[in-house]
Length: 318
Ligand code: MN
Ligand code: MN
Image 1: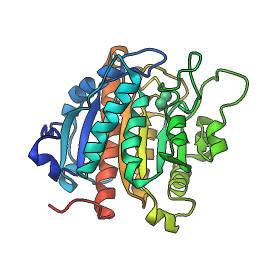
Image 2: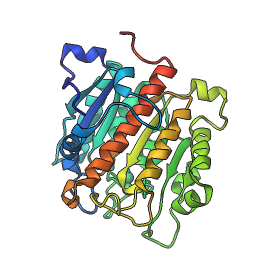
Image 3: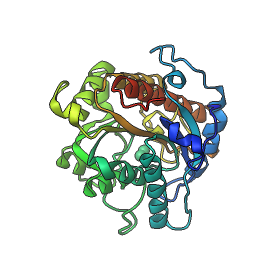
């Protein structure tokens, strides 16, 4: 986004409100790999990002002090080590009071980010856009850490409050006859693609706000809650718009519906403590349009995040 490049050890980092961070790692991928190359493709496509959002009038770069903070450390050879490395890096980001907006990487990168963000806050709410639940127990005979299991681990580890988690866009075939209901059994709200089509965008936005704010639009937990994380797996969008991803599922959201849903998060009255956009695999992206869509969704989240930070007065004093 042509922002200044300010790494964590730069003295100017302490003045940042929002840090854009790459996580060039896809060690949790079960299908087509390549999301490790997402950050560099996103940075390339993001050079055409402009300032002011026509729909909302928000200019995030005027509202908040933003920078590209470079990439998180990663380890392509050791999943557990890598999760620790990412969590340590995001703990340092969090300790300086910077709200992270990340570009993956496969979706397992959200787990160490949540470990860092929930450490002092307690269980977070989450708005999770995805074709997949990412709440399977294990893959390949017992492997617990993959991009299809990360949010189950996050709930088990107490990083997410399942009653304040909502998933939008789920679809596609299952591995077995039994439906994929583990998340709902924990209290997660699921708006799958069929339900999304039935409800329509405005009703879905209202439902999202109700869930992550703890049931009531004006409830006490909305004010005192631990904050909400936004996680956007680009495979929630139809592969007609985003072919450049490792596990595409047909029948998804249009890119415009994705924008509308993110813009609807302006209504949230809980602090947005972080966000990510994940699963961009640029080698399947022959037109570069997947990268453009990905960075545009990242920009839409940045707009909402910047306004949220100003409205709830959680921004630093400059
Ligand atoms: Mn995912
Ligand atoms: Mn997915």
